[in-house]
Amino acid sequence: MSDADLLVTPISDGGDWRFAPIAELYERAFPPSERKPTAFLNDILARTDYVLLAATIGEEIAGFSVLYVSNAGFGLLEYMAVNERLRGHGVGGKMFRETARHCPVPMVLEVEAPDKGVDSIEARRVEFYRRLGCRMVPQLCYRMPQVGAELPPPMRLMLTNYAPDAIAKSQLGDWIGGIYSGVYGRPASDPAVIEMLSPLPNRLDL
Image (cartoon, rainbow, N blue to C red; front, side, top):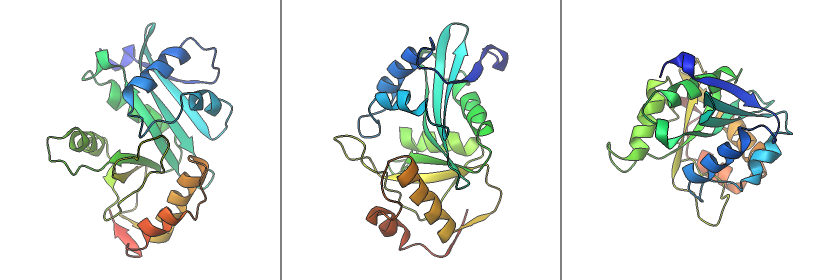
């Protein structure tokens, strides 16, 4: 497969033929602890702060991504998944680059903490994003709000489209508060936000 075979374009209508297979892939690709109700995909089509991108090869869904773009000057790659049949063929890399291209501001990624060894799927996923130019926010133990019956796993944040070699704690706090309010419907001053920021220095080198 070449890049020319893969087409990545937004979806704006739930009646689009690509929507149903994307909803099915969403259900398969993410564990209940990290997955919002599937109706969420329909809901974001009416929001101007979200982009749902579909990757296709001919008439087949190759993958999708969900991008939240805040008016506070950052974006969040909330979900990205590749069709199981096409993994290992470069689809994920192109999906990521196209998603970043749709984000005109620094883009944040929530990733599972790579604490289970260098060969774990979590560590391999982090390394995948590193190869695409993302940088880990050091020292931050990120707590994703609970979206289902199960608690989310320990997580970290990564950044791309962000040129400086450091980030201020205050800037990071604004972005995390914006994620909590804009993406999860929680208060920007949620106690979890305050708790995860409190041990951090005023400047974090990336």
